[in-house]
Length: 353
Ligand SMILES: [Zn+2]
Ligand SMILES: [Zn+2]
Image (cartoon, rainbow, N blue to C red; front, side):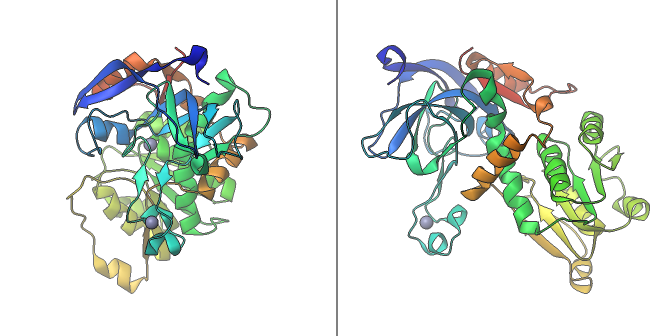
């Protein structure tokens, strides 16, 4: 049950590209196989910014974005058996059909009918969200409510990192470079460290990211003036890497990534470039040295439970990602203005604020 049998809830509703309004909307009704989550925290991410700017089109408007949320179960559908009211839960945002060729090949993320909560279906910038039981992951005992939940709002982005690094294979004793200026670069750095990557070099243009990179265990941090500044020089200075993780959306970092990937090595393309942009690199680099490029876009299934395990392990330094908390009414200004020049790595919406 919702609190006091509430029938309406507050939500940050995208009413047109570039415009959010805080509205009272009906609490979503749940199907027999769904649970109603009382959202505690929902992270704001670059995908939300792309949705806000109209660069990623959502299924319908008005629409409630928000795909990085955590909360407690307020109600369950008649056939829900695995999840009980009051459980703290995180969410796999990917809803796949289960029967198309890709689903049957064990690749639900490539489902021809894929829908993502907060991108295609209403998400977590609201007091409540309806999610299929299948997509709900209990966080485990000992985590009850309130502030204890906040770091689990990072499950979605960390599950993305988990999936990406599963695609690189073991990083044990692998020379690893991470290229990027965002929270994802710092998550990659930390998960690579848990995997045993040595040494780990972070390449950034943002001095704040460089500073956090050092704190979070990078063996070397290189802060360059701009992304186009001489890959060749970087290569001379740093040598080759077995794995290069590229989280930047800037296309010039692909070129840099290919250049820094050693013979037989792998470039992991994990940044989300602007649609229609073109990358340039010398194909001889790929063919002659048998370099590989793999990509990854989101965490799914066991990546989500693995992200929860990593967060529970306390081996990741997550405090700097959960320090900036705003209320639902601040979502629009956060997406419009961002926080240029600040030390903020991540902004989280507190739905109880
Ligand atoms: Zn995200
Ligand atoms: Zn499918």
